[in-house]
Length: 369
Image 1 (cartoon, one colour):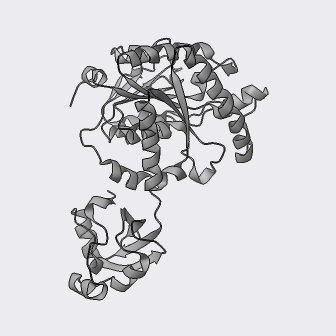
Image 2: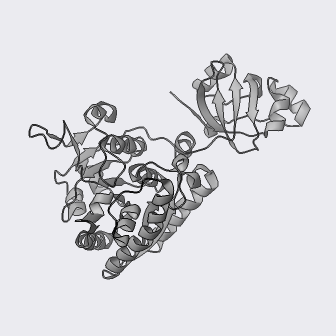
Image 3: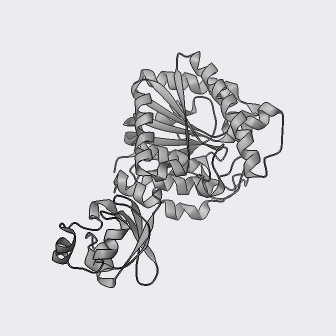
């Protein structure tokens, strides 16, 4: 494994997540911080770094724009404030970044928009095209259309998904927490944990407290970071300060550095496991379950039953005989054909349909631990 300095030195594409409280100061947007950030990004781009921003703050910006001071209590109120705040906040980014001759592009995402493989790829292609055109993508969750069932929960997870989506080399999460501490940071005996190699072990120190406007505590930041690190992307959780990005990249002891895991998950399998929404379900027997856990493809003979209506190339959940979902995969048959061939041998399938293929190929399959 590369050491911290080596990982930071090789980071070319960097995702920076800005929490609500990072872009706000004294109940207003902190334009001084954004100006300093623009200056840093300009210097980084001159060094051929690629920067992607994931910015929280749409709802907070709406509150500021409208002169309100109470966090919305309903989804509808949140959506209304976000619609005002998104426009207001992107105007501020554009005004400040333009002074440094930096062009920006806004992208609004929802989990629903990434659950379909085609739309996931389209989102990636759009971000990559912006980078190719020397434009800084500024990404936020689309709070104006999101509902409780289809939101990321907080932008820490959105930032982590974006870092994986774009094959980033580094994810920097800026928040008031400033890193992981051994206990409450206000406790004089609390100490900053500067490096983490095992997130599961570190979770015992993490709280889930929420800020006045934000939604994620330190626990959510670590859980979100795990999504990036299992895909080989190091993460830094740091606090707001002048020239913070440059200081991190220069290797200064700022915040908490989380090492990536050596084993990277394929991007497609990561999407399958985390984001894909199954259209149906196949129930498999013990023999098929054993074969799947050993890395084999799913064959018709191992299927006991089918539920739902799905087409070829849709994602389905895989359930064992105990009623437990053990994985997900992309099917090569629609539900009608699969009902005809479930439990049949390969030669019987070929006689019936005129061809045979795996129900789910192992390359399009993910099995849960």
